[in-house]
Image (cartoon, rainbow, N blue to C red; front, top):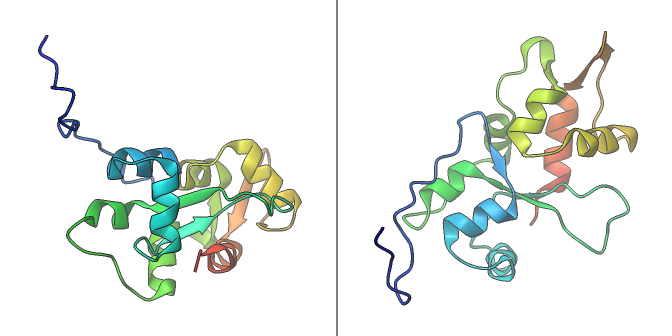
Length: 152
């Protein structure tokens, strides 16, 4: 098996993300951008990446848990995705039949664990009904959460 020279960056990996996933972690952003996590954070802080949300649990003021919009990462380095926040948030959330989304789908779309979604619900950051054994998150709750958590 042939290996790449040590001084040549790997660019051969065709990294694909499911269309169901709209927000990804800093680790995925690192892989896409080819840099360390501090460099990714610096790009957020200087405004090079604009569609980033901090989804940290309440009380975690000393750290950020960032999620990056996949559409913006796909468009780099050609150009930034600029749009109205409401339109972007609508794309991030996707379809919400009956004005709600199953929490299991939210876990996939936002790259969150079930425990993290439950923590956000318990803290009142997200809300919606539980029907049977399924938790649903209301669209209004998702929109408010994303508007509040957009890193500016």
